Image (cartoon, rainbow over all chains, first blue to last red; front, side, top):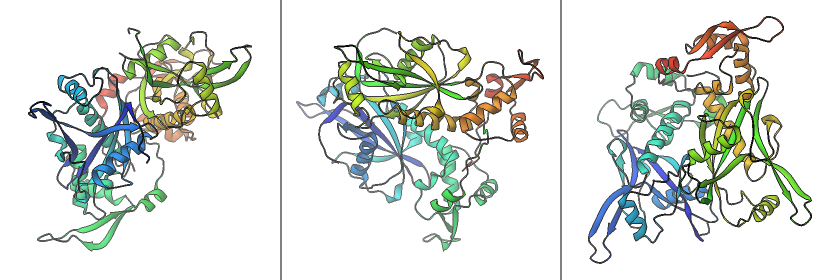
Length: 246
Length: 246
């Protein structure tokens, strides 16, 4: 991707979800602002990861670039879920101070297009131009800079909806996983408790879930059987259902 | 909505779907360009309905404004389904000529946020600043200006998906309708043929579909019973289902 001129009006924000077998996490960056005279910290708060697009770059490529710069990973699951352009989205005092400090017109309108991305936390090593970027449990995030709380909630809603209808949960798991880990994933993302027996029944209907002749390693006792997701079987067996699931 | 300055970079495009009991239609505008010297028509092609946003206006309000200017209707179903910003989206010769003629920089990047809207065709009277706007059957639209064909296809995909999971089809029907009209709506939008008996079985489970003590008027023989959609019953009986419909 050729780096040329940035477009000042159009940006992407990436809501990068990670699952660690216990909770759903999101990658956030510390937006620290120091006084330019004495170097004292004026404030420190958290934002989603994002950037402006280059003039010759598509939205998808910009989102993939943010993700690549952060994780070194390519071909990661990325899904556009909304455009955010409320007239007041950059108007809180910290946001205005930050825009001024970074040489931007605080009055200008910036549209952000949201992408969410799914990762198995254990696969990722983080690095971002020396900036402080970390995983935070989604359930503990109460406030973010700009309108990023609105964007995060919207991403979570889109993820939940997608998870009910498409086999995207596997993007949040390592290649091999146990059925308990899969159940936990659904419970955590959808914020529900599932009955194990019912869950196993539903699972049994998923032909694309392949039982391996292999067991969990590194657990003290009763290692569970490992499974894999087969996209090939999924694509073959998938059918458009008219179920009026309403 | 106060009219102030337009934002040159951010626009909305509305994909306004209408159903006439036979086919799914979309509202398109004739983008005519005349030679400024001799008034001869240089070209005439079709676009979706859309506009730039005002600097103090939200995306939603801009989309509602376009819809109001066209139909005089307020509180119409409007759903954001995507942001479109491909670097080449305005680069075809006609698009470039049209941008120049309307005093814009043909090199500038414009992002468009798509909204789709649902109407019962028979409820609508069209008017748009003397511009030529008409209903066209979606299945017959083969080419549009800019990237509007991409936007239209994306809207149709979003509508189909939504129709499978939410009771939005009623937005495309008049207040009272027959079960055959409802079945035809699903068949036309989803591009499938449905078995009448199976369809009636599914319908019987929809508690929010209220049978009226009233029959169709103005039909030659065997007038069918009329039904209504009750949003109140829907909201009460709705439950979040974990169905792994995949």
